[in-house]
Length: 206
Image (cartoon, rainbow, N blue to C red; front, side, top):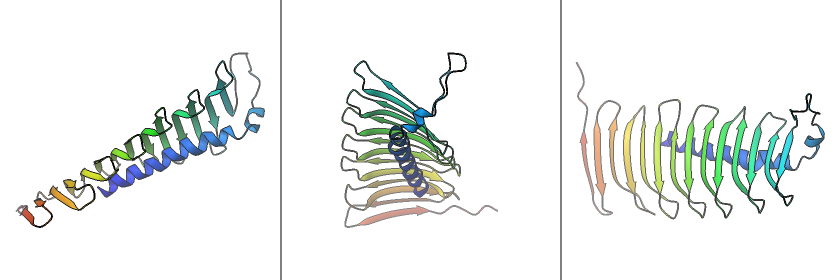
């Protein structure tokens, strides 16, 4: 589960870098427009930054390339707030994020440089509700959070085994079941006062 949570955390950071930094940096760098070259045949436009506007002259989409080689696309609503953001950084990975009408990021999807990949779904207040991640080492996991953003269910699998955990909103783990890579299994329940546990160890193969 730690590997899954790490993958999701890295994904969130990558999305934030793409969405908040890359395109905004391009928006505040008008000199990039001055570097555009005239079309060679009248059909190709080459530039470091392109801004599309609507009939009222408001920015609606920005395409920009940073000095680092990172590239980003930001689609804006009629109020100039982000609606969809897509980014690629050769040193970090790829990210895609979606916003609601109140400028809250509701979904993020990404693949980072080490091959880890993840999906995050957020509530309207920004609290994470569901996250899913996987990495190149064979670890994968899912976590579900309540309305307060607290994880209440986790499911993961990896080199050490597979496990499912259920938690209280603000308290400890209440129930869990797991199976180790060697075949041993463990089940426990906790009602807050008493813990019940059953374990079965794998038999050694001759």
